[in-house]
Length: 297
Image 1 (cartoon, rainbow, N blue to C red):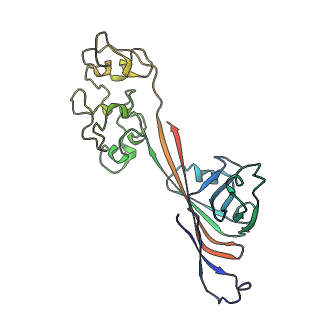
Image 2: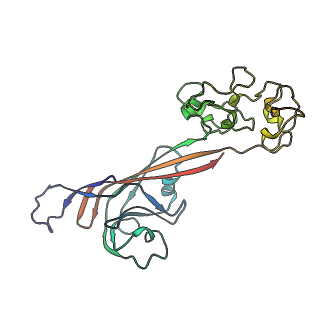
Image 3: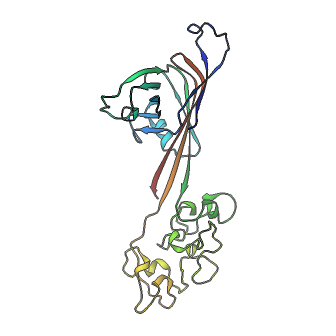
């Protein structure tokens, strides 16, 4: 378990043996993997870490607002928000319990068998929340390999021109067959140098709108119009129509599959110049909160 290290200055009015400027290191054994009470657009957010033996929690409560909502759903990466601890609407608490605190922090009706035995509350301090996110279409191709033009900018690579860059596009050629189902990495080594190319035209199937080269776009070979190109066979054929160059009938497709991608949001919380009872901390590495969203384009 990683240790949460606080550099603190003891209040000399209480500990008379210390001299001005003495710094003592106190170690609190939190793992810095943060949890969250509430979801997006909550009236209040509670971010917390807990540990056992002894049973303790470190919690940060702050109100929901347009700015604070963006901490957990940022529009840009990276983005930073500053929250001021004031001891009323924004609270930082280090608490000890007589039992497992897991069911006490978020629940409206807490476990009556567990009580708080010690509560050190901060009245001041500054919290900096740094939010970053990464997007991935989970199409079996690493995002860096979807930089088609090789300029280091993933946003300007949009093979099918649908307005969604390839690294967020689960169907890179807009043929209604997911990229991951067009064998972009046949041997599974993480590279795409062996990507399937059915018609051998030099364009891998996942980037080719006409996979079998029969002159009919793949998306118009969905005979039953159910969005699944793998169950449409011409009479006597052993390959589905979109991989069968001997059958090029056109079927107008209206069932287009939506695009979904995964966004992983990571929020790093750092706390500066705060106090927790007798503890004055210049810096607390509070920890990191991670959330994964499924987004439909």
